[in-house]
Length: 536
Image 1 (cartoon, rainbow, N blue to C red):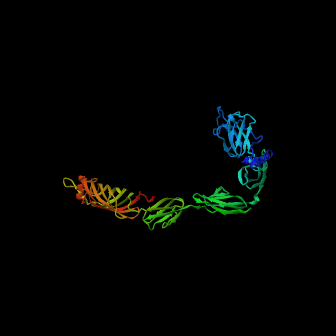
Image 2: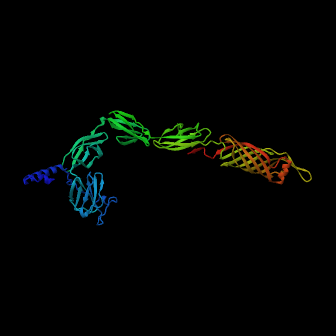
Image 3: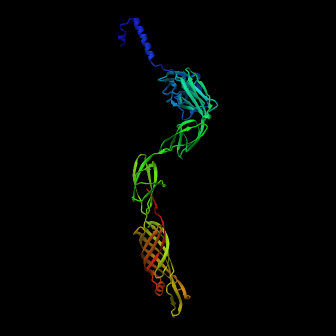
């Protein structure tokens, strides 16, 4: 193509046209900035500095010596480094505002390359020592390094072109050429200026004059509920309540809470006044819950044990774990756990257990009156476990037998006594529920009876202490008029297994039987060992 353009021209015209074309081409190409190391920026850290020897920083060169670290101040990335046979060792590490390079001792130079800013080769002004740390400032050629201070204030927040970059004193901060808006804030002090960064080299120094802005501030109290986080200008400042000062003006205050959508409250702060604002609360994320209960009617529900809730239709509830207490008269309470998921409908079911006044697991004690040939008071204690009933009773004789007279061989009266019957017994049975409040427990048992004689004439106590062993068969019929109380009737038949000879004589003459049919009646107090509240 070029040949077709220039083949008809004379040599002089040809070279003229060629020079113009090359000039136009060069002007059309972008001009890249040429980077360089700032003059007098190279510095060696004291030999007492152990940064290069620390475990997380240490690298070893080919001579088994600790590498030196060169800290290069720059805000750019994507550099390539070369020190010939002296490194670098491993990849460079980019940190905030700098990059670290590891080289071996006696490295004479460091070559730095960048695809945009070109190359520069820096010859170290002093000999590099193993294990030392050095620094230098690398300028890509498009700006200057600046040290920024704030008059009379340390740790003032520095904002450059709307971006927070650090706190004063801010050293070795790189600014590109041109006009930059630089601000500093510290409590109620403010600096705000336009700063021109001219072309050239060397570190610039800037001191920001802080001006007291108290007259433009007002006291502010922000009120939110407990566990609600408060954010002012994008930063979390408190939870619940925040007391501080703000410059006059309008602010969007954000409140946040777990499992909730953020809420925004716009406030208008007036200078020189006390400003108090109630913040909007974050809106809880919700899901829906439908619970089908058995029985289906007259069931009440309490959300988290305190708030009534109606499950005749799906209910919107805050997300997360929720506890619901279901109640119905005549049924055990049921505490139901469910995890509500955002924007999801959960369909669940619960079945309430009907209250049985007959306890399947219980401890009881009580007493009654035993009607038999010799009546008495009966004290009882027992256990019911999965309807198996085991009890122990003690009988204290109350009714006396007819008088029994004892004679010697000559027919002379020795003494006359009447007798009462004490004894203990153990019984086992299985409780059967007939109705919610009525049950029957068939029982078998063992009883030992003992006679106690009272002298009515003479001095001898014949038959006192006589014993009999009896096998019993019967049933305990219970009625529960209210929870934790049984009224019982216990018909029973006793069959004598063994008896002392004196016991048989006394029974015959005293007109009472050994064993036989008895009926006891009384009351038991019940301690339920089963669940009264169930959880699902």
